Image (tube, rainbow, N blue to C red; front, side, top):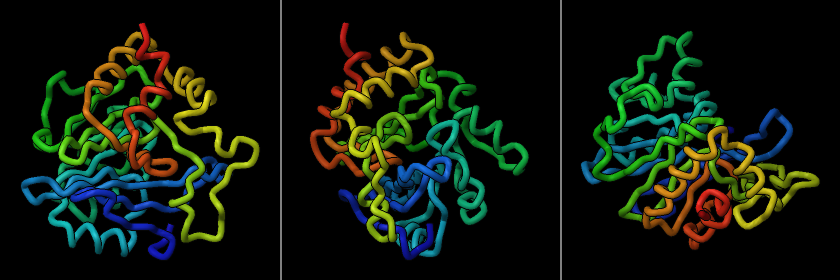
Length: 244
């Protein structure tokens, strides 16, 4: 996950991705990705899910002052500390489950999804909307950037193989046996989505709320960006939660 293996690109105006190799359990190459959005204020919001290497920091500093550092679920928290160290004045936000895992690092959080009162705002909502999925096993928070019609998420939806994330590495990013099966249009992903819902009723409620957003693109943490037909991909993967 060095600067040399990180793919940095502007996916659409004011939305940048930082994609790099990452293997789950050190075995499955699912890729990793952070996403930064330049807000209308000129400040920068970043879903921090990969190391803050030199190339990543250089680009973030070019975009503007980092105002928000976000952990998108209970497990994407490994690099929050190094982002906060470099940007100490930024607001640090994450689900309560992630915050509990970071207490030993002495990090101070400015927002806690799952603990804060419903309707709590953090200051970026004029540019980025969000939905906390309490019914997902990883306590996902999904974000929507209306200006670019982009959905940004961590483990809600995968789009493997992770070709872009491994494009500057010596690995192909392919997963033996299930390669190509864990994408939104495949039946395995539908089963995966159903299995990760610990509260089916809550997931139905939240998936239907997300479906009301007008997005055409999905930026996942794992796998390639769904560049277009993002709404169709979401509806395909979460069909069981959207049907009556």
